[in-house]
Amino acid sequence: MKEPRTPRFEDVTVGETLPPLKFDVTPTSLVMYAGATWDFHRYHYDADFVTKLGMPAPFMDGQMAGALLARQLMQWGGADAFVRKLSYRLRGTVYAGDSIVLQGTVSDKCVEQGRALALCSLSMTKSDGTQIVRNATAVVELGRRSP
Image 1: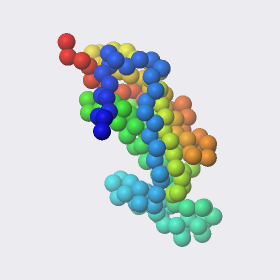
Image 2: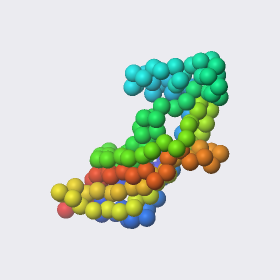
Image 3: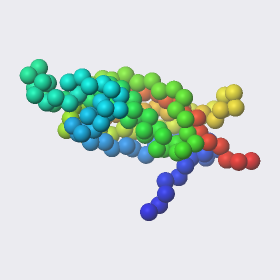
Image 4: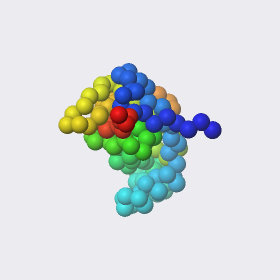
C-alpha cells in the first residue's frame, strides 16, 4: 500500500485539491462523538425520542462537522500540520444514515511570523447533493523541508 504524501509548505500549490473525505454518519459514530465530547443530548442518539418530535433520525452535533473538517485537514497535512483556525457555518442537518463528502482546496499560502501557512476553502455535502457547509475556511500550518 502506498503511504500518503505529507505535504511540505514548499510543495503545496494554490488551487491544489485536498483528498476528499467520505464519511457515513451512523448511530454508532454519533454515540462515539457524544461520548468523546460529553454531549449526551438525546437528539444525537435516541431514535424514538426524535421520531416523536417529527425528525427522521438522530442528527449530527454541529461541532462534529468541525471535527470532521479538522480530520480532513490533518489527514492531508500529516503529522507536522496544525490547524490554526477553522471557520464554518452549518446550512443543513445531517441525520444518522446520511453519507457526506468533505472537499477542499488550497486558496492561498503565506509565511507569517515564521509560520508556513496554507489557507484552505472547505465544503461538506450530503450524497443527495445538499450542501451542509460551504465557503468554510481554515488556516493550516504545514511542515517545511529541512534546509
